[in-house]
Image 1 (cartoon, rainbow, N blue to C red):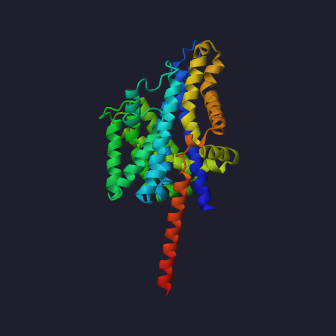
Image 2 (image 1 turned 45 degrees about the vertical axis):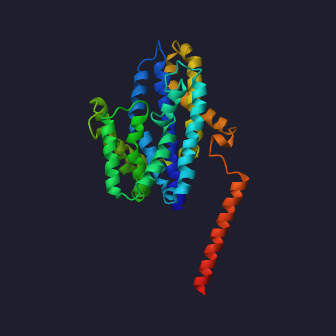
Length: 360
């Protein structure tokens, strides 16, 4: 029961995060690009809401990813490379090709997309585009494994320092390079501080969550009002508060039967939503943006929420017909599977023989 509850609250958190990711892209790349004639305060409100929750969605997403990377992290290098590093790099490359092909026909849509082989190579290796989360997971797994012998306090301190100086603008971070550097610390915290994160989730209460939420909201509002994002440590500390708030709130949402079950169901299907929604949003924006300017006020008020819900639904429908090689690393050939099975049998037989010798 305890394991099931942990899985449910983690899926709830992932469900919330993926909704916030799609909503932010909808607001920043489509909604705010429309020249509304009658939108009232809604573009400003949606813009502030989307930007404010940047401190929550990816830090929490990466913390959850780190928590459930622990078993893979402990495996031999060969398994880590195939099951994590190669898998995520493969998905990153495959969907970059899909995105580049579709976004080629939507040049007015404001997002990072390659227009030449050189730009594609640069984005794949150095300045990741919209699919940067997949690239980050591959790099984070490899880096965490390589840095395994470094004491955890030193490792977390160095990653936190990297996040602080990146958020302060010390480095030139075009595209999503800044996000790539800033979120490594949250992945490592989920990986190495999993017992603490689980304890926060398991002992949560509405009262404690409300207090954490109030502290987080106050810090977030102060940061935005004072434009203090670039002051060293501010962005990272606010993101840390957001992560703790998310770990506290997710189990409580999970207890609300309809909402919790829906978010957990969504949280188990984040990959297709993440990789599919951007090309769909680009096509939608290109097709309707010129028509939206004169739309009624109610459309301007509800557009981001309606489009987010529609995109998620269509992504899940498309996922039902996607070939397996677009959602996972292609399977081994029959010969490779036979060799793998033979090796496992030999290993088990060898272990049994050794055990038998010890018993005698």
